Image (tube, rainbow, N blue to C red; front, side, top):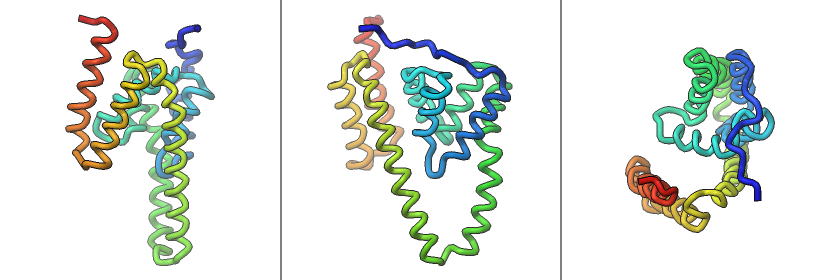
Length: 192
């Protein structure tokens, strides 16, 4: 079996390409762009491998601020330094800010209309489906994790139970379970 590639096939040509790519991504995401970002950056543009995406996404989640914006800044910095980070950040924020202001104005006028409530419920269901599909797609990476899929899956299950079932605050879960996962992986990889 051939080991998975850890080198992306392509890279953005310049900061402008990053800006346009993240503007396009930001305009596709209502209620979360995770699934769209993975498909666009890994599968379509091939600027990242699936493994890089998972690693960067994990870091983006523990940093303060919106996850996708953190990912955009990290990726922009990786390829073009501060210029790339600013281009990716601008791409994620510029057009959506304008659209948000327009949507807020429209919502203020029609907030009491039943069709508006139905539309919002429908968007929530679609977002939940996209996130579920994304979890299934990324779950295949557990097969290649140094801990093996049973241990990695058990840690994922414990994390879900701790946050959703026991309502333990995320920083504590990250500290305990995330720390345990890092220590176990480090040990399994044979590092001192």
